[in-house]
Image (cartoon, rainbow, N blue to C red; front, side, top):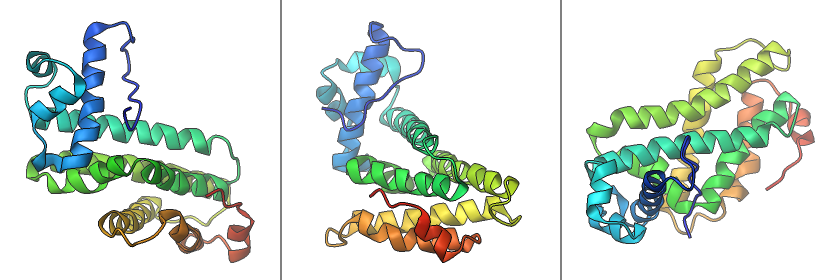
Length: 217
């Protein structure tokens, strides 16, 4: 079973080419998650997908092309998934909390996915620097939009939301990467209450306001 259901835009399930591309990306998600970018081979992905090597090269000319397509697809889908969680709540503090917790929830459920997005893309080499920036900006932009919304509604004072969003994602990234590297780090969810207290209070939410946001972990 794939670790994440890839919903490729414009590709119906009955579209043979679309189904092959999706199967290759789903296989790549598992293979890169297990072996890392440098340890994985196109043959591994083709075998896992149950497709021919010719079919793979029809869609992706190289392992790098598969990895790049996968990383960008995952980043887009993760942001969309988190956005749906945020749409279930209204208050600025709860929406920001949903954004932070939504990202952690996905990483906890899909550890291989977290490894790809947070570690493998950073270690794959300079050729993927644009993809690394793309991933980081997708998540930071989501947080920035919510901070802008909080400023507009008067929930927090005017501030440099771009800088703060970048710092917030950096904090989340460091906590998650430590968790991925250290098998004895414990539950990522266990770290979240202290992390959200730190981040939400950094933009002006009082301890009491933070405490009123229900913990769903």
